[in-house]
Image 1 (tube, helix red, strand yellow):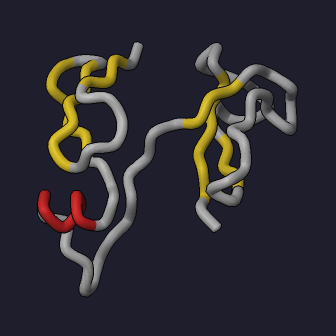
Image 2 (cartoon, rainbow, N blue to C red):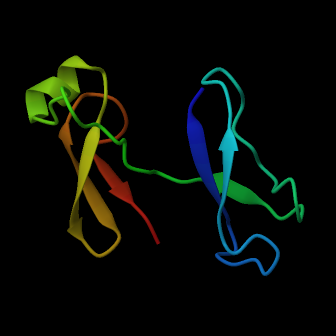
Amino acid sequence: MPLYEYAPTSGRCDQCAGKFEVVQRIADDKLTQCPRCGQACERQISRVALGGKYSTSESAIKNSGFTRYQKAENGVYERTAGTGGPEILHRD
């Protein structure tokens, strides 16, 4: 099962150190509240760890069904591989 990272939407929490991880099935709904403090939270975009025999080339990422984003400027990320998700992500 995948490990998902969450962070409070307010940006900080003294109880959760600002982030927490949850093992969830892909079919499970995203959490909307922190299980420890009850604050509103959102799932974070995190890197996929591939290594060894796995290729991280643009074509291999696309063929595996993943999407890669690259930082274009402060708070703006552009899709460089894959077809899932928006072409541009804006993060505050």
